[in-house]
Length: 339
Image (cartoon, rainbow, N blue to C red; front, side, top):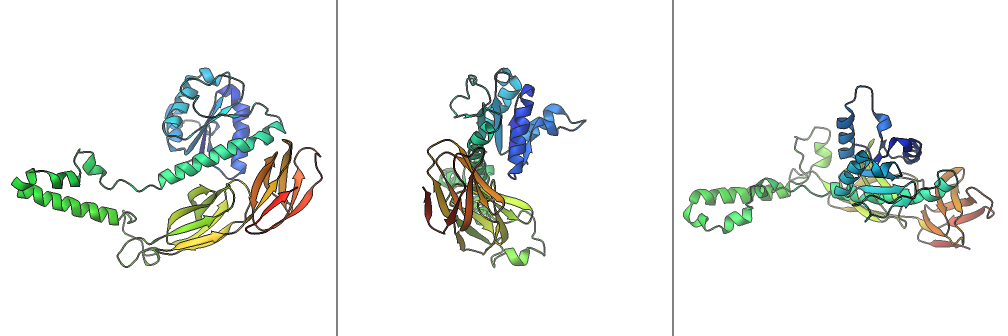
């Protein structure tokens, strides 16, 4: 499953490539039709990639607004609330897609692209976080009953129960089954392996769960990994329910904080709280970059804020010399305002 699917008309190939490369440099997986392999069934491969994506970027240009392919892909994304529209030219967006705010990337030459691309990143971040929360919703344990138009409660209230001992037995069995399904929400569909049963099962045979509470002072996106597998992506100060075990939390798009390890324990909340905020009150729209030593950790433009791990940073103008580089010290729980 790719994080982002890019929909575009082929005359916009250079722009799609630049966005894809920019997203991939920030650790996201991207699918666009450049990844089609010889022998792939064109339509079927694209459909599967689109269905699996958690965010869909649509590039609206003079060519794409008349493309049925692009409009179909945009429609599928809008239906699932994962659409991020981007205007690459000053065009009128097709009917049905105008209710969403579209980021503007008219200038594809640096510094124009780099100055406006953070708007795209922010939109992608919010959609991915929303998709993650939706994916984390519990399955409807009684879906099989409701598809038949009758819930367990409906059955228990039915006057037919008075006349049918068989229905009474069926209703009782259904209620017991639904209670068991509800209590077993985190139960594995397969028997636990010997390597996980001891560590992740509680005394009742359920998979142990806890909560990671990350109190980060900014809106940056962060990802939770179990080994090499990314299991969640959120933004800002947020909580995530997790199975008992060891995890690594990484900054998704930038390096605002160094990756850290966390252990989630059964029926407990593990709270992680650190970081301060740099508030740069710059009166123009110039782009500025934040460095931790030689490492670029974040880029912004104009007057903006960035949450950072405690430490010393150097802020430099990204493209011109509108201001002299300066050093700032970030302290946990504090906001440093410049000037």
